[in-house]
Image 1 (cartoon, rainbow, N blue to C red):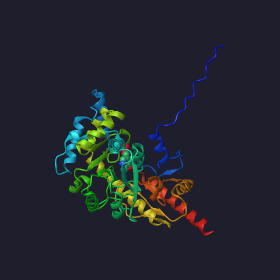
Image 2: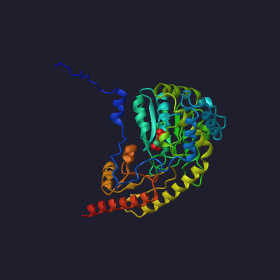
Image 3: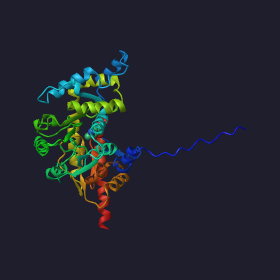
Image 4: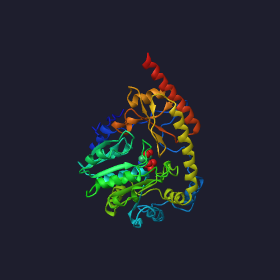
Length: 394
Ligand SMILES: Cc1ncc(COP(=O)(O)O)c(C=O)c1O
């Protein structure tokens, strides 16, 4: 019998950058779903990608677009995007400053890792999309979370002191998780706070097509006083129901985009060629699809709001965009405990604390779910809240 030596046990600890994220991350892994659970937890359209976009990908593959794309992205897509963004900016946007990324996620990563040095202060509203904090940790930056005002809009006074000496301010508009839309006036107030400083602004406008206010959405790109310091991050995931395709993009000052492009080329390489060509079809043809989905979200939002209004102990503000509601609850449970409690009543939602410490006492509900799921899910939330009240009254 041959003596097979045991494999060596190499001591391993994840890189410090990974450990920093592990130590600080608030992102929670969704527990396994069960068939009887109604989910209002996911941040993903329940629509399929429009047919003509899928057909465009098939056609691109059939035509032999199976090779590497240029690292910064397909020139035709970058040209088309530059044209779109030029409708928002005063000066024409150059396609040389557009970087196609693997969804918004990789766009945010390329921007933050391209900008932030160890020790740099990065200000974020709190609560906000949880990826920003993890990327700042990975870069070794210092996260400065600024609590939102009671109406979930920015607290400008608190922002003003936090922004002093900051390298970067990152926010999403419309906001995940609050559903708030920051108005032109709010963006202009931000510009005033930053006047005369070197602070950069990263605006994540993933939900910009999903706005339900009478006032049209204002992009940070339309604010003259933010010009020169703004990096714009966008994705095809939400507007076009293309979450699985992984196409997004960045635009901003040439020097910042060059830094982000370096991160992108080093970490990822170019985005799937056929998917970029399909994204071009989405950009050029999906206006009516966006409208159709917007109408559905408008109905679903009303349905959810109407259902939640009748639940004692839940306080819902006025959501203006994305597909989220962020109610505050009256109960002495942490948001994670509240999520676990509601799960026992058959409905999955997200804990507000996942999006920042000041998100506690809130839950995030998504209405990117079917009308049946919304009606049933809200019924189960009502039952869960009633059970808590009954226990408290004992
Ligand atoms: C605010 C915000 N930005 C970016 C993303 C990332 O989107 P993508 O699927 O394009 O990576 C999400 C996804 O939930 C999001 O909510």
